[in-house]
Length: 442
Image 1 (cartoon, one colour):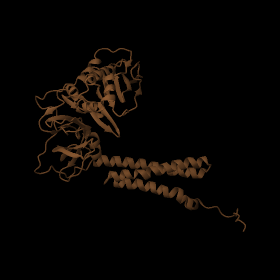
Image 2: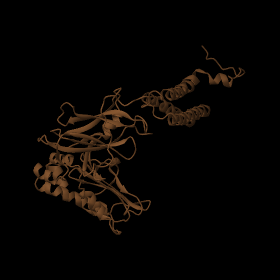
Image 3: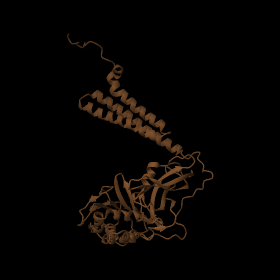
Image 4: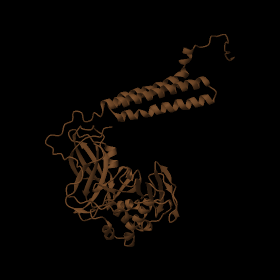
């Protein structure tokens, strides 16, 4: 049977006919319909469930990626018409996505967060209000580490940026007594020990307004002109042998000049070196090239760990803790207002009796809705001190944001402190208390 020979005199398909051929449906119209339909559905359901709206981002991004790749492939193969069609679909999809984002932003700003609409404070439930500052007569904490770093930048700094990368006592403890080192860090209110994914870190916490307060991501700074030297500092220990950021890696036990960059008017460096499997990460922004705060941090850390390395017992480590590290009395949970309404810090005083981490859960009282579940557990989690003496209380201090509600919309929340033992035993609730709170306006 002879193959059919195309008739050169037959009329060519019109543009409309070509647009609705089977191949056009498969390669253009169906993918475009799925992408645009997902965008429209996402826009509609965003007012009900952001989780569902976020789930629709998968087909949206897949559609955009499909048209982008198809456009490149068809142009490379010389199929100009198909490539232009894919480009048109990409432009239509991208433009619709941009318009959807603008609409969602305007809509969200106009309607605000509706979580607390109609909520009332629970009747018959005693609610505490978050604290502002320390109670009258409360003792101030002694933050010798912060004092050392601030003192190091008094006066005019030099031009030599070299530092000596050595904290031998830290390396000795990590190699021979890692459990003692981590117990000491967890018990010290100046250290926050926590997990980031599968990696464990200890980041230095500074005292502010007379009490220990963890800053956002562990950075502490002073940028107000006329109130002393300007700086920003971070000190962190990667207990899993990793760093959380991407610092300049320096050899251990050498005197070396780190890379210095200029950030505004300040000289900036971020370095890390290994001590016995612990990654020591030090960030400094200050007014002179000399790394005065970095050198002061290295010296302060060696002074802190040297007595414990020389006599590696819990009695020695306990004696190194600041006076306020261990208190006595009933376990407590105290909520403090932080930088903006809806942002809080919590002080937890308890003794779980074994190694492990505490973390927070919060629930709106009248309906039982869990608040900021993932973020609260992440930001409100910390490995804390412990002992076999029940009346010894250790400190956990965490900062977090409650995202449900807006400024000025007060409602009742029950905060629960949970403990997850390192032994693998069952998690247990340590305490709970009720507070009058508001959400962060976003």
